[in-house]
Amino acid sequence: MSITVQKTIPAARMRQFHQMVDRWLAEGPIKLATNATITALDNAGIPKAEQTAIIEDRDIIMKHNMRLGVISEVFAAAIEKSVNSSRSENDARDEIARLIVTAIGIRQGDDSELVTFTFATQSEADAFDAAI
Image: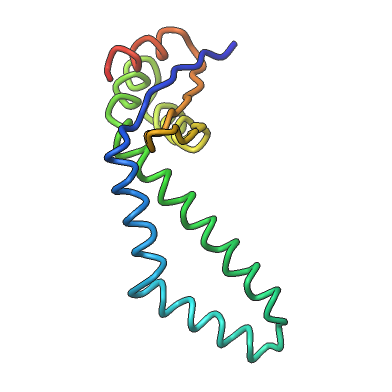
């Protein structure tokens, strides 16, 4: 049995997140790494269309990983509170990671994000819901 709980990341926080991601991908170390990757792909004789796909895939993966950071930042304390009381330390750590990684986020029309968490027990879901 699994129990889902939905929570919202406010629009202002998500706008800030998207601006940060865009800035990270457009400047600094990420830009240098992109240029180095393109040079290496050129030197390897990889066609331009394939290079573009590789860079786009990398950017998608980076955005996803950064999004997991936002989910963790916003919800980790409540998730920890909900699972630490009912699980051993190792099991709690694993469950916290699972909840963050498997959270499903859907951007809303106002730029907020509706995030769905799937808990294994009703008591953990209730504790999370009450903690936010």
